Image (cartoon, rainbow, N blue to C red; front, side, top):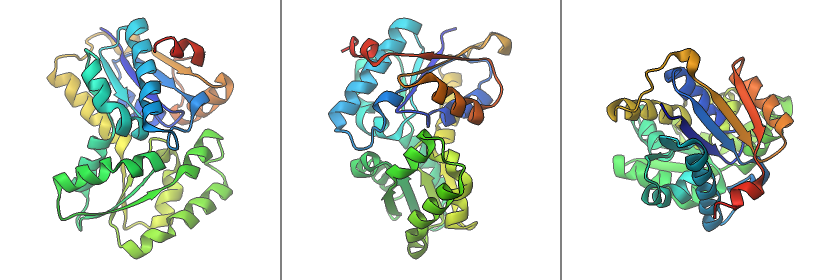
Length: 272
């Protein structure tokens, strides 16, 4: 059975891979982290669409993937409808899953959102939440610096904890009861984020919600792999330095039969 394809602007999408591996241990996954062109948040939407399209075409042509998961909120906001129209396989993003999980979780309808500037400016989360719950109030805040804490592998430091605390103080006045981690990098900062916003605020991991929806989709579409768990493979590519990517990946994912490799940006650009 064909593999699941996943992409992110960098390390963050591995949080989705980890959740998917837990729910779907029999599935092979091919992941591409576009670390060389990270961050996506400040880029023009047209650029993000181009990058996502290149990665999708690489995965389809090389691995004949059965489903493409955009494990990146910014790329989902910019490229999801485009790729759904262009590709002949299902394409799943992270925003709808995260918004739905937040609406189900919130008791007060006062929902916070932290994401990249690209995701916040797109208004995709706000629109989807309003569609699901028109009376909800969304308090969105761009946190691009959090992405770099993860990409630079400094997310477990005291400096990172202090930075997160200072940035999220603003939510105290908003009286939110739910906070969406609207960037797949942010679950690696869960402890610091929870400490900053307080125990009465429930964190919603959009990536984990997406993994649940992915599992449901594969089951309903009769696309589940029936081979033994031992046959599952995990190919993890990065367009950036492999050593740095592998260090953070292994720290987050734990032990496993991971296969790491470098994917030159030039090879992706040939897919235009």
